[in-house]
Image 1: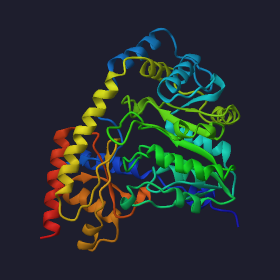
Image 2: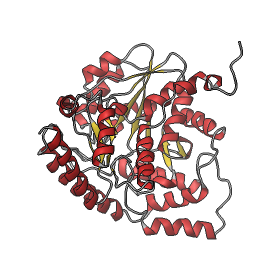
Image 3: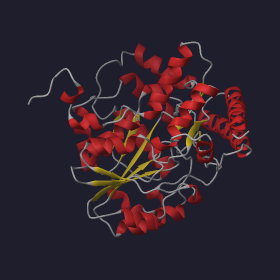
Image 4: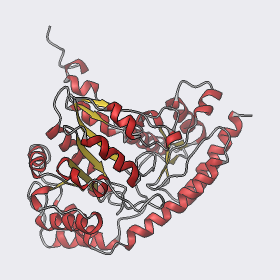
Length: 403
C-alpha cells in the first residue's frame, strides 16, 4: 500500500528518526512566551550576547561596497583560506595547504560534511557523553550508529582512555573530541589526549574529529591544545574543526572551517557543492577580518564570561539540591539537579526544565539532550543583571521545593 502523501508517513525514514535541535527549541519556546508578555530569562542559547566587534563589521561593509557580492569558490575565498591557514600555523602549530582547508556555513555544516563524506551505513562513531546535541543526529542521518560512552561528574565529564578502548570496535570509523566541551565546559589535558593517542594507534581504522570551537574561551586547565599538539603522528587521520561564531560573537554570520587531509577535504567540498555551495561572500570577508585583525576583543569577551561563570558557580554551589563543578572555559555551567527531580517527583530533567520555565521564568536546556540525564545546561552568555535575576529565581524555586 502506498503511503498517503498528506501524512508524515510519507517522509523518508531518516527524517522521521531525526529530532529537532533541543537548544534551538528551548530558545524558540522562550521567545514565544516573551512575545506573550511573560517575563522569561533565556539561559538556553549558546550564543554570545556581545555584538560582533566593529572592525569585523566594517570589513563586511567594505566588502559590500566593493561589490564582493557574487559566488565564491565552493570551499572559501583564497583570502579566507590563507587566513585560516595562518591561524592554524600561528595558534596551533599546524601546517596546511589551501587544498586542506574547507570553509562552510558554520561549524555544524563542517561536521555534517565530514559525516557525509566519511561514514557508511553500519559504521560506528564514538561520541563521548555529555556531547553537543547535534553530533549523534548528524551521524545517524548517514546510517551510521552513534556510540556514546558516558563520563560523569566524578571524572569531570571526560572520557578515560580505558573507556575509549572499550567503546572502539572493528566497525568504529570516527571518534569525536570536543574540548573545551559544550555542554560541560571541561578541557582535556595533554596527558589525557596522549592517553587517547596510545589507544588510537592500536585502531588505525578510526578517524578523529577534534572540535575546537571554544578554543579561545578558556581560563583554567590550559593552555589549550588539541590531540594533534600531543600526537602529531595522527595528523593524517585527524580533522580540526573550528569557526568564528563563539570567539568573535559571530553566530549569525555562519562561518565554520576545517583543516585536514586533502582527500577528505576534497570529498567534503563535493558534499558542500551539492548542498549550500559557498558560504556567504560577505560573511567570508568578515571572518577574514576576525582571524587576521586585532584579537584583543576575544580576550575581553572571555574575561567577561569568566567573571559571569564565577558568579553563577558561587551561587549554584550554595543552593539546596544542586551539585555543580567549576568549568575550564566556554560560557556554560552544567549542574546536576537530580535531587530536585526526585524531590518534586518529576519524570525527568525535561519535566524540570518545563517547571522552571513556567514557574520561575527561566529557560534552560535539559541535560538529557546532551546525553546526561538529571543535569541542566545554563548559558552564561547573557548580562550579569540577567544572571543575578535568574539565580535569585532559581534559589527561590529550590527553597520552595525543599521547604
